[in-house]
Image (cartoon, one colour):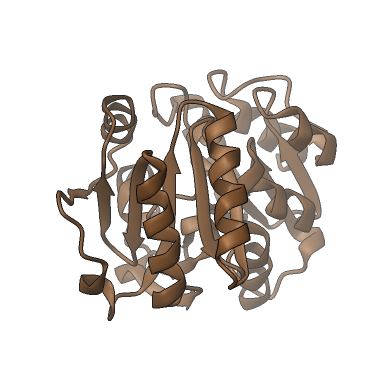
Length: 271
């Protein structure tokens, strides 16, 4: 029996307006009532989805968990207590950040509990604000200010996939430290520590809970979700997901993220 659901947020759990719908809320609560853990597994900071946790009755609750920054941070929701973290070392993060700035894209830098934005584009600002992502705009960034910070990831927003791919290639060629580089939300290229991905974090949390991979359902839509879809006993891709992700999943939903797809999954495999 499945005992843990790990689930991406944007374009998966949330609809296109960034909203957690009533149908999904009801189904998730029904699964939890049967003893199933429900864990957001997002590229975002845990600080940006506290309202979603509240809607599910998980905010600041003991023995409930969240994974954020593409597996860079695992927390217990009670007091946002860190259980595991996989950060970028300072010199690697600095090298990635400088290449990102030079690319001309909208550049995000995330520490454990803060977000910073450089060269923001209006379309990126609108997307972030719709999803409740809080950030500080850095007009003249000095990376030395982050020497003692826990740097979780650097991401860059471009409207065109060709630009995202070009930056990925440049960073992975010029930065010699191994990195995890993934795409998300049809807008971002994301750079994490090599040890950070959603799949590793899923298995790490499952082990802490005394569960096996076969007891896990992982749900996502984009390339940064592939690792957890491949790691889980049941990997699920959304109907609105990328074709390459669908090809790796064991189940593809009939509903998309605007049609309570989590309800479909839970009713089929849990209830």
